[in-house]
Length: 414
Image 1 (cartoon, helix red, strand yellow):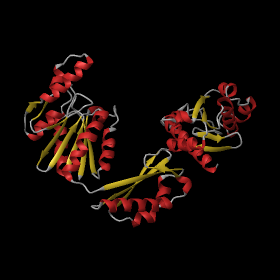
Image 2 (cartoon, one colour; image 1 turned 180 degrees about the vertical axis):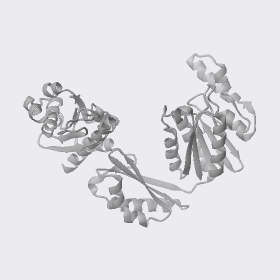
Image 3 (tube, one colour; image 1 turned 135 degrees about the vertical axis):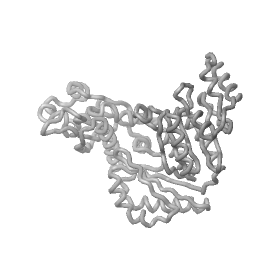
Image 4 (cartoon, helix red, strand yellow; image 1 turned 135 degrees about the horizontal axis):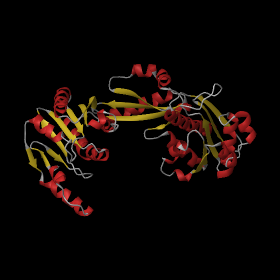
């Protein structure tokens, strides 16, 4: 099944809003073995929408649209679909009744704009949207499927999960498909590909390997599709273990839904260890990543954001002579920050960061992007120096990920 994704909205074209919908839809479609062959974004212009629909339906088995179903005048997706199919509109009474129930609970009146959302093209099958006011719509003509969903992400996700994906599976009868992912950290995509070059070259057509890089990490996704579901499961497990065995063990973080921060959390919990952070250049971002994991309070006790030297000295006990002789961005300083965090917050382990995130603040001796990391306990401290670029946000994010990976390796060594 070939799918084309079409996103609607001027705000997407001008970059005012980032299009996360198409990425999320593609992830959903991967789960059922569908192939996304293209993606188009058009503004709130009727002719552009019609051109995009015509082109997409020629190339794909199904076109999934998000956006343009709201109650304002620039929401013209329904008008475009009616014109595309050469049909009029019909009032959908069930949608009106659903909206009335919602408004009654909220003690809000029905408006003309909301009532207009109950009109749908004559040939549409209405998809009930329990998360919002605008219904989804399913169209079939000449063997092609077109689906229209709201642009609000959580509304789109609801419709994809409970309406669109089940219908697509029944309609196109896809081959059984399964996939697994392996998360790595410590090497870039090109080096990972080098480890797996011969393996990838030997894969049969029904097995696909995808590289999904992120800042400081690479996730590998292995997918198997075949008519025999038992063969799919068996082959996936065999090939996955073969792939895993070709990588240095220290690069492997976790599997499937694991993240770097969740994998570290499991290790800390398993060994009954507690963690704190002492952050300068990352400004709390490291603690944010750690606490993004549900249940992180089991092992994460707190963080000191010691941005100023005064805080480094008063809160963490960094020596005045250390700062004077070596500077805030130094191996000596992050070592003392780790020791101070362990002492102050009474944790088993601490991570420290200090650096020049940029784009200003560098010197010839310590240019922008100079970062020092440290991870340690009361007996041992490991440090690492990074030399990054001038993008402030990327430097902060990369430093935090590297700090977590340094912690992972520290725990692994113990």
